Amino acid sequence: MVITAVMFLGFALCVAASVGVSRRLVVSSECEAFGRVWTKAVLSEYDVHLLEDYSIMAYFGNDSDVTAKLNAYLDYSAAGKLDAAITGANADLTGYELGDPANFRKALRLGFASNAASELLNGMGRTFRDLDSMDGYEEEGRVINDRVVLDTLPSGGAGGSVSADTLTENAQSMGDENTVRNRIAGAGAEILLIVNSFNNHVTASDDKEHFFVNEWEYIIRGSPDDEVNYRACRRRLFLARNALNLLSLYRDPAKVEIVIAVAEAITPGPLGIITQVIVAEAWAALETEADLDELYSDGRVPVLKTPEQWKTGLGAVLDSDDVRRKLDDESRENLDEKRGELDGIAGIPVNAVQIREGLNYDEYMMVMILAMNENTRLLRIMDLVQINMKYRYYKDFNMMEYYIGTRFTIDANGRTHVFEDQYK
Image 1 (cartoon, rainbow, N blue to C red):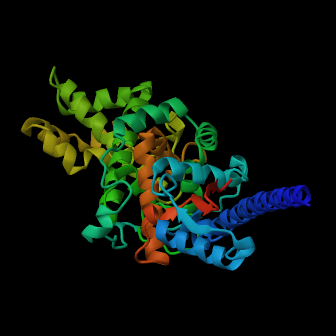
Image 2: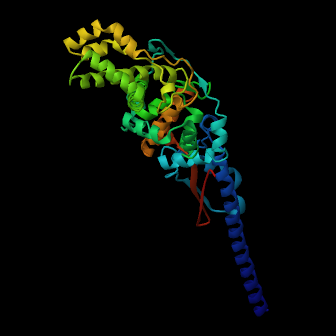
Image 3: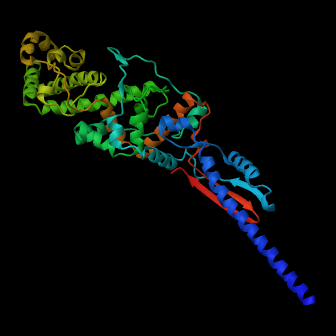
């Protein structure tokens, strides 16, 4: 009987031990199953406005908020089951902040992965805005003066831009609209976001409310003053087109011959070379003004013009105050005396035919955007997303409070279960 009792006790202990082990395994298995579900539950609370407006999946939260949600899930799903010793959950979201440029870029790539670049570009549906009149920019630009808003922008006011010289060189190297479009298509998700979601001075991407009128220009210049961005880009565009027009002029023997003849009539002798430069530069500038009128009317301007594509005549240049101011007294007298004769020399017809070749305003701006430092460009894109989200939906929107993934632990029966997931 003693031996039987000992054997029974041993058997009972084995059963109890196996039950304990089984209980721990069941609890561990339940924690693993629940944890995987809860990661999806946390990620499912993404902000619909970010997704709809910018194709970005991210949720609002912080460590304590997510921890509180997980503990609520625990209380409902696992607490008290099999007498499990569940001590709670703890979230650590460090490294998943949307405000981290690497994470923002990852979110953009995910958001645009399902859209072919060619489909976006071909069907982008940008519309002409017609903001300008004869006097230039009419609409009053907004300015961000709030120090807190400025200090919390992802770029932090980082400098950096693109010069007119860079625009000139890159426009020459690309040449036509097909090359620019191919560069846009292969440039990455952030460029597609610019085309798909941000306005510029000439075209709009959608009918949503935007804080800035000139968003592409903000990416290039980076000022919190909307009109400063507009003026800066207009100036760069003028300088680049002026250089390209001057090059086109000197490549046309007929125009060079006219410039030389006019300069010799105004300033005979060796000093005529100076007058040649003055007249040529003024003619290129006049053509550039016509180009900008065309671009701001959503027209196209060739990078380097053929003689047939030149729009202005030299006669208007001779009447300009800019030319007269640069001439000496004797040259001004000759200009006045020989004005009728000079009209005969300068009288080449003005091209009134609409040009359908070349780059439009969007493409000239995109040449500058593509030439920017990638980090500066990305940070200013992030600025615009944050500014517009504040303007449209949440006054206190801050990218550093949104996350593209989650990480947390659950402690059960002395074992720590780690869970981590992100949008894929």
